[in-house]
Amino acid sequence: MTKLRVSRDIACLVLLVIGVPAASALQDASSKGGAPIPANDAIADPAVDALAARIVAATRLENVQVVALDAPINTQAPLEIPLDGRTLSIALYPHSLRSPDFEVLVPDGNGGLTPYAAPPITTYRGVVAGQPTAQATASVIDGELHMMIRLSEGDTWYVEPAAEVLDDVTAEWHFAYRADDITPSDASCGVDETMRGVPIVENEPSGGLRGVGLGRTEIGFDADFEFFTQNGSSVDATVADVEMILNNVSLIYQGEVGICYAITTIIVRTSAAADPYSSTDASTLLCEFTDHWNHFVTAGRDVAHLMTGKELNGSTIGVAWLGVVCGPSFSNCSGGPLDYGLSESRFDHPFSTPLAERIQITAHGLGHNWNAENCDQAGNSCSGVSDCGIMRSFITGATSFSSCVRGVIAAHRDTRTCLEDCFNPTYVDFRTGAAGNGSPGDPFPTVGLGVVYVPVGGTVIVASGTYPENLLLRKPVRIQGSGGSVIIGN
Image (cartoon, rainbow, N blue to C red; front, top):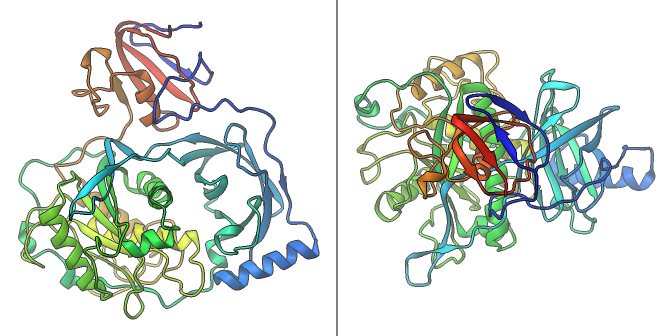
């Protein structure tokens, strides 16, 4: 068995496979290999053209490119995806959004909640060959691909399964589009200045300012019964759907405003009787959510978000409290913290809501929690900016914030004292003997966990000693010894 030796304080860029994957619920231990996955160009074919026309009719998309990928998707080899006359080669790496104490909770039938075995992680991050600043996110769910590709030149594409919108197509068929291909809807945000915590002077918590840098925000999710039903009445599918949306949102926030997210809890309401939320008025529903979590949910979080499948009244598809991340109690609703928001994620009745819009809805709502207001409305510091982006009050599929909004969010971030650093670097020390959270004061006990949580190209700092574990390293990371030599492997 090969052992990896890391000399003291010397970093190495690890790109190779060493040994066999360690047993870990968070690692992808499959060992598939082979040639790059073939993809069929959107060729002139009557059947393909007919499929594209059906997808357009079902989605509000004005134009799509139909792509066939090998099914199920093989994440062990680069994906070759033809887009707009060129073929992109994209390597995917497993990426966990789960905090070390992540849990899924479901109703226990007696008015409480009980743990549910967390399903396998389905989220990935990716790199595009030949475009060093391009980024990709992906979820592979039931062998099908859901992907956002942010290219170096600022061009963003989305890839979704055709089966997401049509019932009679097989798993290999997917479609690609840009946000510009979406026909605008009248869906809008329900937030105004009255949604700010009252009294406003108490918005800022006591304590010193946080240093500028990446801020890891712990987030809890609640999926109501209607959202669970929209995901095939499957807990696993509901969890995968929530993580798919946040994977994209977190990439945007991390790249633009130095914020990453770690999920602590996902509550899935598996029956109407066990769903405490009933209103279809957005503001009332937000108060129901706020009140319930403040009084009955003990999950740790810096912010929480309700994914609702209810058809909200009017054109409103989301609402959130303003400037409340890590905030103290306010007088709104029944009193208590207001670090909450909600999204009607699949709002496009009777159409299928494009992934681009689903991402923007949740990114927009969280933006309000970070003190950003609708920049196309009067009365705030970013009113009238030309590049409004994600914080426009109606949905466009935007994937970036305006420079003004970035400044507002960063200012709020830097006054939050509850945030930790993002998982880069992660710290490992076998002597902890506990789960840890990857921080210097509470390191992970195994190198495998450090690798799982660190982003692509990140650093895992390992305390000196011997780590008798076998690793499958599926992404480029730096492993750096600290305090002496490190031996990894049996």
